[in-house]
Amino acid sequence: ERQQLEHEAIKKSKELRVAKLRAQQEKAQDKRMAQDEFKAKKAFEANEKAMRQKEADDRAKKRETAETIDRERKQQESFKAAERSANAAQERLADHVAQCIDQETHAKRMAVRAKEVDAHESYIDKLNQQFQDNATRRKNKAALETNENAAQVKKAAKEAIVVDKIRRDAIQKLQKQGVPPEYLRPLQKLHGRSSTTS
Image 1 (cartoon, helix red, strand yellow):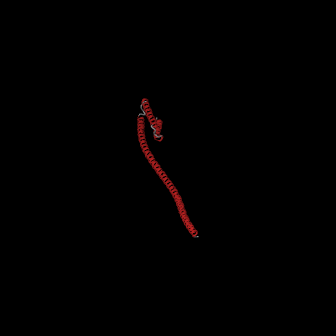
Image 2: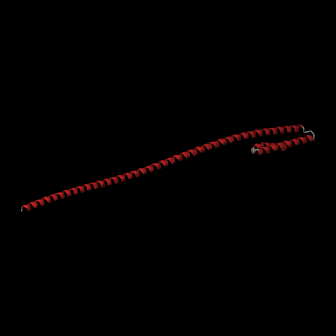
Image 3: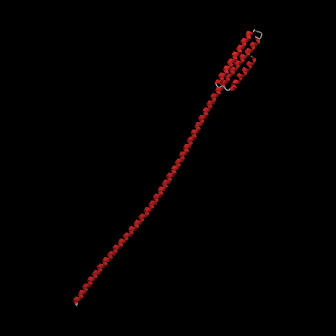
C-alpha cells in the first residue's frame, strides 16, 4: 500500500512537471505569437506609412512639375511678347529712318530743280533781251533805210530770216533740254511779232 502511495505520488509529481512544462511551452508560444503579431502590425503600419509618404511625395512632385511647366510657359510668353515689341519698335525706327531719307532726297531734288528752273529762266530772259535788242535795231535800221535801194531791203530781210532761224534753233534746243513750254512762250510770241513785222 505504501508502495502504491509512493507510486501515485511520483506519478502526480511527474504529471505536475509535465503540466508545468506544457504551461511554460504554451506561455512561450503565446509570447512568440504575440511578438510575431506585434512585429507584423509594426511592419504593416510602417508599410502603410511609407505608402502614404510616397503618395504625398508623388503629389508634391507632380504639383511642383506642373508649377515649373506653368512658370516656364509664362516666361516663354513674356519673352515672345518682349520680342514682338522689340521687333515692332525696330520696324518703326526703320520706317522713320527711311521716311527721313526720302524727305531729304526729295528736298535735294527740289533744290536742284529750283536751281535748274532759275538757270533756264535767266537764260530765256537773256535770249529775250537779245532778240528784242536785235528786233529794235532792225526796226530802227529799216526806218532809216526806207528810201534806200531794194538791195538793202533784201539784205535786211535775209538778216531777219537768219535771226528767226537762230530763234527757232534755240527753241528746239531748249525743248530737247526739257525746258517747260511756259518758258518758251515769250520766244514764240517774239517770233510772231517778227513774222508780222517782216
